[in-house]
Length: 194
Picture 1 (tube, helix red, strand yellow):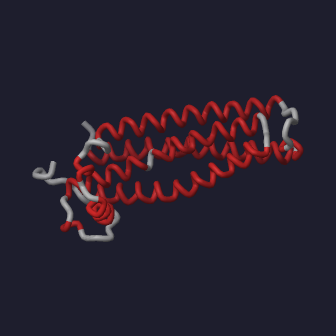
Picture 2 (tube, one colour; picture 1 turned 90 degrees about the vertical axis):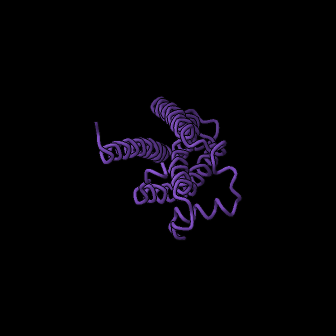
Picture 3 (tube, helix red, strand yellow; picture 1 turned 60 degrees about the vertical axis):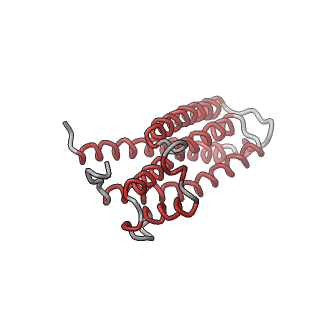
């Protein structure tokens, strides 16, 4: 039977592998886009015929993005089943009390002023929100893939907007998930809390 550290290592390895796959897909989309523009800058014109390689690369990126989106959605659903975000004990708390728990998890306030089980549940939900990034990147990849396969100005603008929004959201989601993981590592539940 694996120890807690082995389970944590396995979970971290799975998460790192998932983010590596997502990063490889995004990097592949970016490289393919840049190369297709460098090879033929006129490919950005609306209604122009594209090459077979460019079309195949675009549709493959779109299919990989849909797969990543379904995988990210499955991660969110499986994780939220355990933390019950819509029917759990945090739903009866006021907005101020939930903000206080987030401040405790972020270590901006002391732990002794909040119940440990509620703070741990808040930290688990913050970690779970980090998985939303996989779904968002998975949604962006099909748009970028179809833009590569059939370029148009508006589709390119939409892709750039979605990439900017994902980068901005990713900064906050990953920061909160990292804070939640560090809080869960530091605060071990006692037998009375479990």
